[in-house]
Image 1 (cartoon, rainbow, N blue to C red):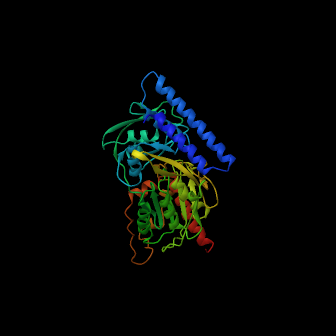
Image 2 (cartoon, one colour):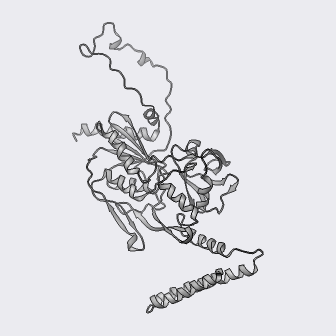
Image 3 (cartoon, one colour):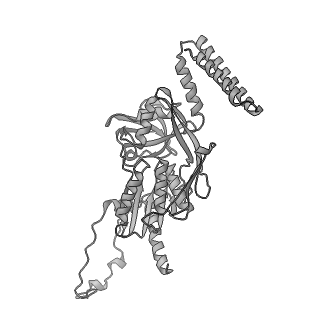
Length: 433
């Protein structure tokens, strides 16, 4: 069947459907007439191109491109996907795949990095949130669909790919020669920064993230916790249900998040319920411009319930929910069905979560310092035959240093968070609480 015949058939169905469904409403009839005129215009353009374009055209490809433009112009997160894009979408949340390890989006029609995934080639090479990708190998990304860009960056393990980016305040484009690798699917890891003070890093929200988080919390809570840092920096988000489950680990009641769409079926409120393990310790959550979507749901819920202090820089600002609808022949559409709101009713769409305390990223470089005159002064312990603190007491052995914890303590934002938690513990004792 010719493409124009297919469109004509569609027009007939719309008219027939309109007669059955819309009898009795002038507003409905007006909408029907408008749709009919638009499709009639589409048919006229299609016929004109088929007859007179300089080269012979593929009818099916013309219609697919028209659909792609229709869906793609709705918002940056809606797209018409060919069959191969569905496999990639499943890999993102379930299986293993090989690539460079970045999450990207279309921002004002420009391919932009939301965040690199920790422990991947892109992360290790220094690609940052906010970088604009202008070329993949030698292919320009101008007008390149999002799914195609993702497909080009994925490939066999150890195969090279070249990424060219423009970065704010950098006068020239930056070129990264990367080798694809398996993208780690472990979503959480933890470390003990100081006795009683834990650090939990959540890198993304995949199918088993809440299970991974519970395992890490069990390790940290084994000997008791005085405070916890939850690191959501450069976490691009993922599955909504995982964000809800993780928020629920730290909340006993109240709204976690609500989603509101045009259709009632796309509106829902998600509540917290008491957990078997009660977690009353103070928390600091770290966010930055690479914290998006599910990360913002967790940060917003904990912030609105005054369960955690939010520290860092303003998050990405993706406050919408998407669904995927399969079509014939393996095609599909991903489109936005709702906006989500924090417990207090805030929409963070295009605004982001603002931290309670703004702390710029940075590294604390330990300085090699000469002993001061005070350090060189004689102390009681240096005196000959000085007494031990207790009869028979011996110098205690220092605990073996944790290299990961040492590295984290040089992170300016982690260090500030740890100082806040320790200070809170001290003042709580002073005030008798």
